[in-house]
Length: 327
Ligand code: SF4
Ligand code: SF4
Ligand code: SF4
View 1 (cartoon, rainbow, N blue to C red):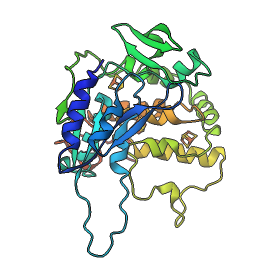
View 2 (view 1 turned 180 degrees about the vertical axis):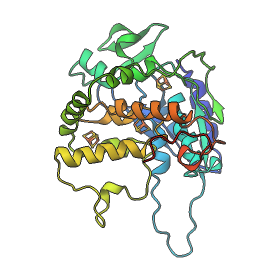
View 3 (view 1 turned 30 degrees about the horizontal axis):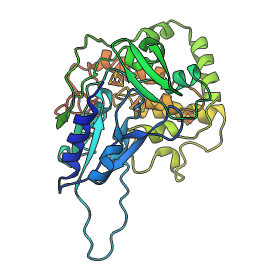
């Protein structure tokens, strides 16, 4: 568990700098197990900052969502830096966006937290249903310690952890200006067990599976809106001229949307799992992302968001790159 006092002290130092406009962190929500993003604009806000295993959001999405309003005559753009608090997986988004030249390293101040894993909101809400009052949460080496209505529940971590955390390879932020906490040892290797077992299915079985999943899609685009890597000024699905994908919600258009989303993230997805977390239709989007990640690793020996000095996959080639898929 992170030392909250140190996290707040580090954040306060950063928000008091003249060259920082706000720092993005988390605060306790108003309902049940909810935690919400917090925009800290002055040192008065710092005491609302928290970090606990419910801080699941990847806050780097907000770096690319800054509203750029038209300036009044004579006014100057606020070019101060934005601060953001990141876990290991979140930090890969910043690295990948810098690789893509979507963000300048100097425009962001990064507070990194070595992370021992976060709770899956769906799992905890299922275990403790209809929880409306806010709760206090802590952890020891093997358990989450949850205080509800004065009663303490110890739940084995394995039961509530997000699936991604059970096989986390990057608990330590890849990039940061300040690290709060000590680095965590990891022996994690890429794990594609789910993808490999799915690959064994016949084409018909695969299609039937995905058709059933895509039928459920309501085209809310929450998966896109939460994804730090979906930062195009205008998303292809919103374009009307030409209209690449019709707005009607049916399996054909839904399939086009989901395939397009997955392919636009090939070699770019940093595996934060946010798209799947927010999908109201519970479509296993990470399974699609993981398949593409595995292909990219096997074909090009490339993983997204690990080194700011490496060119993004689609901007480079090696003379010995495999070409058998080119018709
Ligand atoms: S995947 Fe790793 S870094 Fe990300 S929340 Fe889980 S344990 Fe933390
Ligand atoms: S979040 Fe789920 S339901 Fe919404 S558009 Fe994405 S895949 Fe479809
Ligand atoms: S596609 Fe999903 S898992 Fe990948 S970066 Fe976007 S939100 Fe994260």
